[in-house]
Image 1: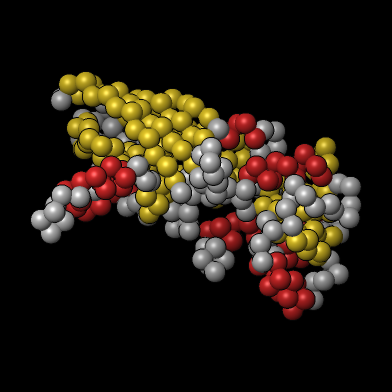
Image 2: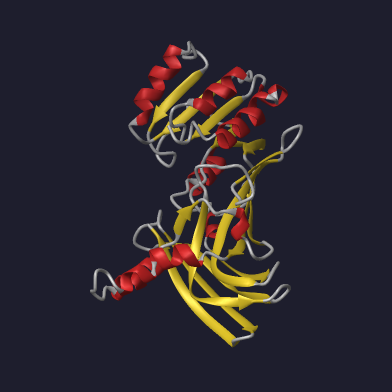
Length: 308
């Protein structure tokens, strides 16, 4: 329900599909992780010859009823199972559509499954929707919430529970960031071309650099993403940034252990590592390190985080 009511998400997909009937007319379409079947129905309405939706969860039974209630059984076939294990009634498809993104783009993401479907079934001249994604970082001042979330554990009704503080700092927070809290310019962390990328590309290490946009205290780093439909007549981008309209992905906040006192135009830079957790590949492990030279001297740190 939350995803369907996410207008930025749903309207973005609807416009990318239904405003481009010339791409869908008489084409075979695959919907990876079809859920309720909403994207499959958009594709059928756009004129697809046939749409195949694959879904491994039990919601497929509801989706089949929805397809039936909308008289689309002749143009949409839903298949229950995993992309890695099922077979399609056709050797190749012309278009793959999927809403695969997770929090911070890659948490509980289905992108690796989309890549399997691409390599198994997509025609050499086929397209994927969306076909591009970019992950970004920006800095914020959020001392008040950090005090409530982190330092609360120092004194809980007179008891020292500070050991929980360490655990709380290691868990990124998914929340809506007030754009007024932004105190740096943003920087790119990772660009993904879904037409050509490989599963190994989804584990990555990169450098980052943030420039202060005003005098402020940097207390947290925020990660967000855009996805782009660039193969259509007029490209469409869905943004999850703090200054963009609300989406259910919101933003992902990584609190620093110590705040940085930054003057306008000063620069903090470091390293960002993102990789699936070894014991549960749907979880994400992050390492963020930085070095900053400011009024408090040289500050360096390396923090680890886990989204689960």
